[in-house]
Image (cartoon, rainbow, N blue to C red):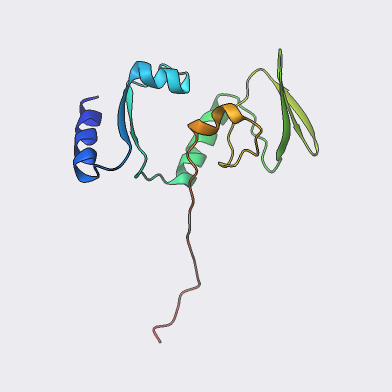
Length: 133
């Protein structure tokens, strides 16, 4: 928390008009439903992650815990009950728990988490090596 408090101070000094807030562990638990975090810093005007590395690391960790990952299968409906049933155009899957691992546009499938997601955009261009002329 000491580092987060310092960052909060620095960010507020550098960008006083930005939405910056320090959260305690209990604040974070109320927001994300987990008690593994000691705190968090929200800075709505900044941030950066390497999304591919985050995705690969998350998938590796999940797979090591026995999680099954279904790719290229857009969800069209989710039904909650004793089990969660996820329906796609090609079939359905039942599970005890569901982790939403998707892009930021959920198409109203889960309105409850809409305000807890951050829509990110990545604009990158790659070309073949260009000549000096």
